[in-house]
Image (cartoon, rainbow, N blue to C red; front, side, top):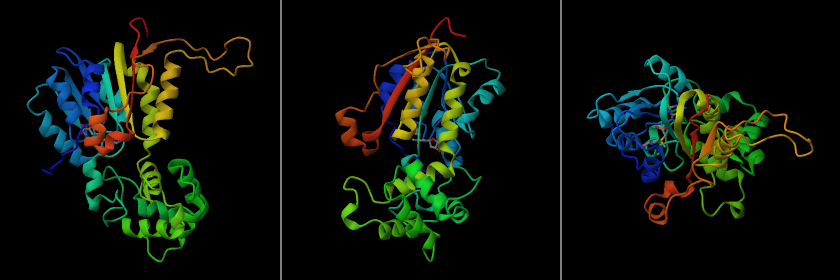
Length: 308
Ligand SMILES: C[S@@+](CC[C@H](N)C(=O)[O-])C[C@H]1O[C@@H](n2cnc3c(N)ncnc32)[C@H](O)[C@@H]1O
């Protein structure tokens, strides 16, 4: 089995929000190395853990083996409702998403996620679907530029798309990083991130349909949780966090009508309460020790006891 060491982000905060205890069923939709899942299982909960990545499923399974009743399945968390039903459960007492890729996926050049080491331009979290290389080959320059703007918020989306589509070779992460470097004037390179970070992020999100999975999960949340059930979601960029924030506001009954309307017509009705007023961020010590924690935002919400 592969060594899957990933430092779980905001572990203490997640445990205190999801309150694992004997008799509770908690769903971890992004098992990864199983760090969060193990902490929840240690708290006494029965954990149902999911991941799309076979290597993550192996790692998390090994980690949860000592805890009877816990399972790890290779599934998309977008299908959490189906999974829960297939296990004969009505709903769960808590659900966690720790979004994005794990350090292990990033650190393995052969997975093609990273611009730091050369590897095939893959970026898939599981064995199915189109690779980043195939996606780039399928899109024309304009479509690629739109993708980089929308999913990477990349200011140089046009020049990068041109450089990528006109490159002699686009087979490896090194080819992609070099095409980005050629497209962006040196004086405009960001100081805190690699110049290709946003391009890689955009392609990874597209290859794995990450926002579709998140939207499906957020849509199904009311049915997935039992009354007093809690959801905690850790996101790492604004595209994810904005979606989580907006949906949580909707679930707690915040009216989304335009201000010019004299009365509410959107039917807002509180079914949830927020567990923190603002997004929780990692403390100083964790931010110093785990660079991944620096951009993490944790939002949490609880289903009201009387909500359907
Ligand atoms: C940041 S890691 C999770 C790390 C984990 N919390 C831990 O403590 O080790 C994110 C994981 O989510 C998985 N993932 C991302 N999107 C997914 C999806 N839609 N369905 C299932 N797993 C997904 C990735 O394969 C990756 O292993």
